[in-house]
Image (cartoon, rainbow, N blue to C red; front, side, top):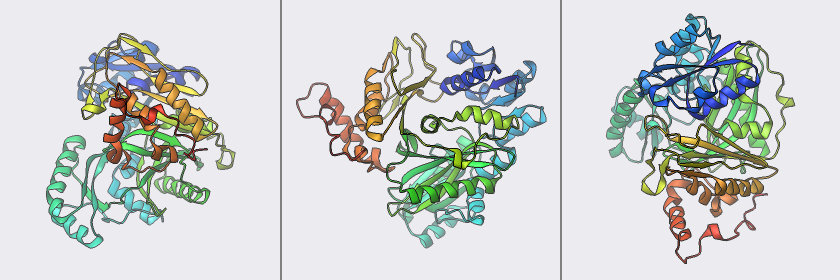
Length: 475
């Protein structure tokens, strides 16, 4: 096992990794930007090193500064968390060259699966279902237009190196395609330094279902069930749950087998996620693989009892998985709500600021992953997520009620957050019935926000003030 690990990240994920390392009795080195001089993760670490100014390019994306800090402090390994350098093959390669273990897959695997066009080809070769689309990258908008004409509209333009919804455009007609292609490519170049594009058929109103994978270097690959990530806005996830209410056991088994097949095809080791879309007709298609730990990994931990960060570290230390597929058991239901510093009523306007007062929920089956504390000032330089509320209960209805209670206890005074929106979603009839897709927020946001106005003084009945669970079929 490692003696000392550098955590190349910040915020709640850095705190999450630090806590796991402490339980494993591994020393930790935190890195931080000048903007994060008072951050919680540097207070919890064994050592802390400032690596640059507030801009991410000068600090958390500064590979030279991070590797220098790791070498000077005598670290055996680097854990990248998610975001920043977590899926950067150049950084993983530099770690190798510096004699430091990168806690993640090999640079070759990151390159293959990080390029969505190459990943599609690999999945097709190994019999994993993919959405109909281009066989490789598209060099011109004219090529994309010709292919779209063959497979039919609507289509989805995607950056081969993209992620988080960036470099992606939905196209519903031939007239939209050329300007959409150029806009998506420009965004991809700005965000990823890579303008390679590909195209696939747009599956309307799908569910976004992902399977958690763990694999060691001895040929053992398992899946830890699925997460339903369909509550999202502009391809940014807001809520996740496990298991998915609408998957039959037959489809769950088929998708789990496909996820393992995909991971083995890539030669994957560590923790990763195979992402699928499921059509209203029940057909599923591979869309991408995330070669890192996911934001929503806690829901899988809650229903399996397996510490995913611990397993990542063990695999990176050349240890085998301590279990096989038949050993994994699933218990109850888990839901996660991401709490972002933004105002949904104002177009999800980011709202950084000082935390005047903080009260975090607790009690049976409630987990909070956060780096917040009273008087801390959230930064405008990084992602707006400030906390994750995760609950676990014996069944879905009890998990929903537990999450409502947890959100009602949450107080983050000083900034606006999306906590109220999440609370209201938990009362929506379609959410209660599990009858939602990736279009849920787009179709229902105005209605849900109007409930907030009603709850603050209007006499119109508000769903959040009534007991509408009785007919929800959520048990």
